[in-house]
Length: 240
Ligand SMILES: C[S@@+](CC[C@H](N)C(=O)[O-])C[C@H]1O[C@@H](n2cnc3c(N)ncnc32)[C@H](O)[C@@H]1O
Image (tube, rainbow, N blue to C red; front, side, top):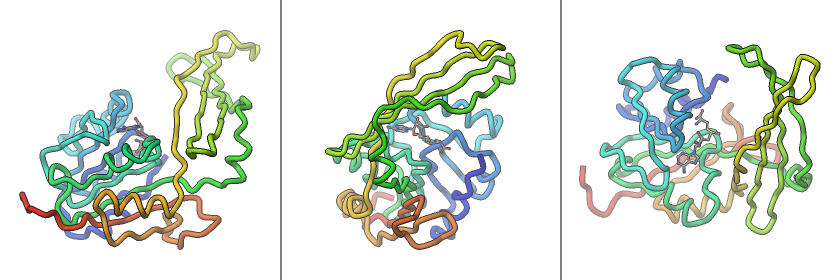
């Protein structure tokens, strides 16, 4: 999957010579070339390994294992990105603010943060009743084995958290199920626009703007995404 946003989201930070990229993995390697010094942070060793495999042994980008709520890079970046709904793994207010906090340990005073989250439809969320839905089978290239994933979503309207139970079915040549693996459930918080704006300000950001898709279109009812951009408020004490 090609991720178009690194270049676009870098645009507001024109002139930056660093960019923290607090996520990795699914994108192809090409966008990394657009920014001179990239650092990718992810809490998953496996996701970091996928990202590393895509860029080889190059020192740039570097990859750091860390939790977005607590990581300290020891370097100040002009631009930080939280792409591909990674921020939605923050399922309560404290975790949201901890993940966004601007700190001299990773963002310069006045530095730019871009957060990409989904804009989920309430009508779709209302349908998430835990029914297991099968997806198309995939073939593992190395072994030729075939697997079919399934997803069962539920949605908690009280705290706006969607939970997915995912399973993989290994298939025989006759399409019979040979084996089933159940993954740990994943919980994603469904964010509303006003909530996001409040959270950015509470965490210490200002000048917030939002667009509704990567083509730059305005955020509206039918937008597939919310792509937020904000600047950290000047730090009380400049340390760098
Ligand atoms: C949908 S994937 C994003 C895809 C991929 N990272 C990319 O940018 O192409 C969400 C990522 O968020 C990471 N993640 C979840 N919770 C996290 C946390 N607390 N700190 C850092 N990364 C986290 C997951 O490990 C996963 O790699």
